[in-house]
Length: 237
Image (tube, rainbow, N blue to C red; front, side):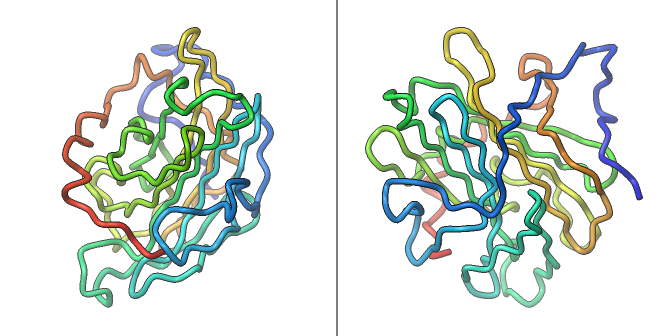
């Protein structure tokens, strides 16, 4: 079985990758505010891959969007999620699955805007990585609760926040990393990560959340978020 390895940028070019914060727990609920999940309507808590560090809680998971919204998460219980993706039966050009993210900084007594957040998405379906990233807190239609909580759900075929070049007809494995940084020092504070295996994707082995340094990555998607809120609507699930 093949393991994910970075074929896009080598250590010789970048130096050491930023260390991952190792406090990952699986199949978790995200915490307050009650009921924990507050984006859209009808969405249940549970099946999150969570990192809690330095008063910050970050969560990632997937859920079913088509052929009808459902609280189906397909978690493997180890930070992996599995989907058979068939756009044909949905009557839509969207993927059958969404990814969800949750940001909670209430334990710091600060606001989301006091930190820097990055959501890294791997678009290489094979054994390598092709990383892009953007600031998920800048998505115009995020669900917010006070100043310390933000959540949203995104289809992987959405421009700017999805998987670039995603092909639902092939087997693929895609890694995601949600990261929080100190806005002043740039230090990594928290990092949760997951792997999504589509159509029996074959990548195996633990993904430790390491991604290239944001200052040296090749692709930045933040500009693609402009006007996104006007083009999308909230999902039920």
